[in-house]
Amino acid sequence: MNWQFVTATAAIATSLYRGYAPMRPEPDTFVAAGPDTLPMVSRPINPDWILSGNPVARAAFHSQPADKCASTVVWDCTAGEFRWFFGWDEMVVILEGEVHVTAEDGSARTLAVGDVAYFRAGSWATWRIDRYVRKAAVTRRPFPLPLSLFYRVLGRLRSVVKHGL
View 1 (tube, rainbow, N blue to C red):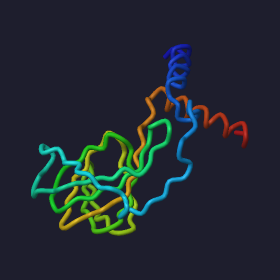
View 2 (cartoon, rainbow, N blue to C red):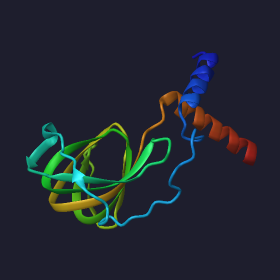
View 3 (cartoon, rainbow, N blue to C red):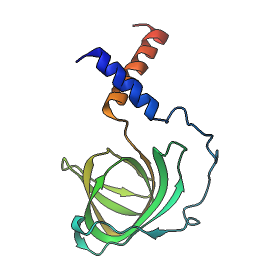
View 4 (spheres, one colour):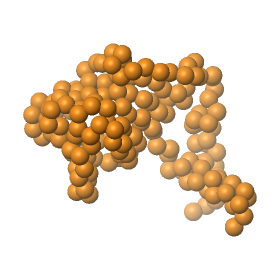
């Protein structure tokens, strides 16, 4: 691969991505709210994804940085089983209830109150909720591949400079 192309792509992507240098100051430097105080709104699950039951999902927006590449939400859902596509990276903490999750590779886990889980962007998982579940979720838009590679190389170079080989 041509290094000039890689460098140009990384430079363009860096100029377009405002994650590390927002163009405007972030209006809220601290946001705090209990999950029960946030207004929940209906967020229906794609009917094609539902495997059984009639799950009813809701979500409440909590916060988002100025670059809009991440967000924090509270989400809840009633009983049912469905497949879910994670368009963004997502880290969840179960606040109430439990969910039985089966990943694409067949691994399964029951997530209960206090459990933390991570779902990679672009992956699918099957969620089975027997009664009810509520989670707090932090989602993050993945970097475009050239920019991601650029930041990895940059991080490695910084580490080498700081710590030596």
